[in-house]
Image (tube, rainbow, N blue to C red):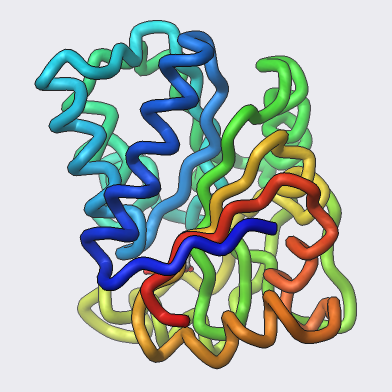
Length: 236
Ligand code: GLP
């Protein structure tokens, strides 16, 4: 595991964006695993800038997102599909048909999970996976608990996550209580992983995840088992 400590959020974002640009330059047909939340926002802005400056070409890239809220349509501004379209996909030369986010409104969520897991395989697996981390150490929506799910699954969100994510919604009640999320095996199958973590509030849980015991109570601690993880953080 490589740990890159940066001075601030902007530097962290620059390192993350540069890693993506290097990946796409080395392999223009890369499959990128993407994340939502506040953490990757600036990195996405930098990727848009790099595209505008003709430093990177997304025309052959495929993307696979980690998760989506259950019950939100793609045109709902709180949905992760909407986030990805407005922060990245609408602003670069990517083929939208090659951008994948789990459907939050599938009539049968279990069938959707199965479809999504197969899709990850069909696109050839993920070359570079970006991960944020929740305040409780979750990855995507793999919440701390006795057990973790290996593959894409329908999951009920923890109180901590609902509270943390309520900042994006008008009221706490508006936050969806469940989601579709890639599982730990889906994530750990990524050939190269980047964990981006920013802000003092996450310093303690990040230390535990990186240097403490590997435990399902801190899903990010499983990253210690992966042989190509780069942690980029301003909070250590
Ligand atoms: C959300 C997402 C995660 C994300 C995490 C951190 O619940 N499901 O994929 O990494 O929380 O979010 P933020 O970057 O806003 O702190």
